[in-house]
Image 1: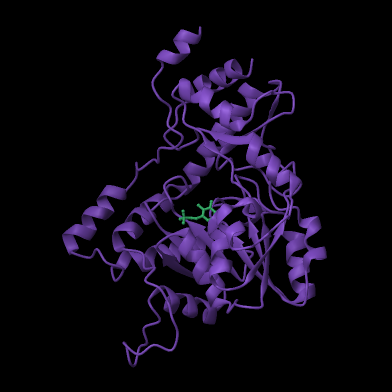
Image 2: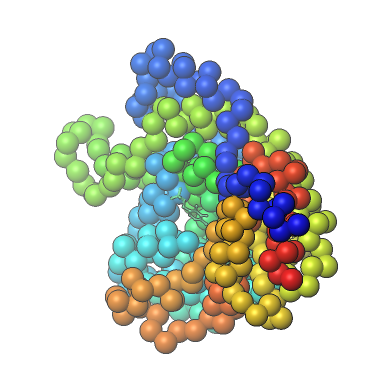
Length: 378
Ligand SMILES: *Cc1c(COP(=O)(O)O)cnc(C)c1O
């Protein structure tokens, strides 16, 4: 039995599906010579993607991380300002705020949804608070109603990190439609990929123009090489946007496929002793299963690192959950978050991991992963 499981080929944690017009549009780039950010696919992709999440403007950039930096800078967040965000997230969120010279104020996770526990936000609002960064995590959204109410009540901006939330909705509204500025990533494990890439979306024309300027070194129209502000070269190439346009055409199918994979894992794993599965839904959202995350229960005598090592013996690719911001050596060396504790996030980090879930995954591979998981937990 064990021998059989081990003879099945590797199951990578993610393989993207480049099965639409990607090649045709890339050929068009090469045939026309338009490969830089000046090419026509960039604008087309920006417009189509922004429309897809119900926003007026899209500003394509070179990564989701870049999009967060641009968003923080566009809102003029800097020294003396505080930004409330989850501790359980990717470093890009905190790095954007720390690099801007502002302070990250961290919030623990909700143990059921793994998102920021919105009930803890208000107690952390001070006169210095400028923004709330809401990060939709692993396939379920942050409950945006309380976040929107708090932002209105305390006159705060919302930066929405929807990097993992293409196609996800919260109370029927698309994720990416809630922030003053909302951001997406198009890294290959994201639902829509451009290889590397990201986007800031907004309904505010002035903010959109600021983002366009910041991604393009803050060149000026009149006197190009005279700068009033520091920006970055975070431009997206026409090649990336060509892939993005083709990916976007397939988005509905990708969403359906992720949900089908999530349901299959859940059917196969339901009732497995010691495994906490992702919630199928909450009162305000249906899981899109961007990744299929698992938490080891207290009855399992080892942690996620050991579970991942054991799955590795079956050549099954996995990834650990985020490591919380307050426990990051880089921030501790900077004297940040000293002696802060967020028990739920710490537990997620030690006990959580995710299994293969790329858009090229087959039903047979899912069945195999589920079998191996049950075997290693026995
Ligand atoms: C992937 C991701 C990012 C960063 O995107 P990159 O394109 O990899 O820079 C930011 N936030 C979240 C929540 C992500 O999952």
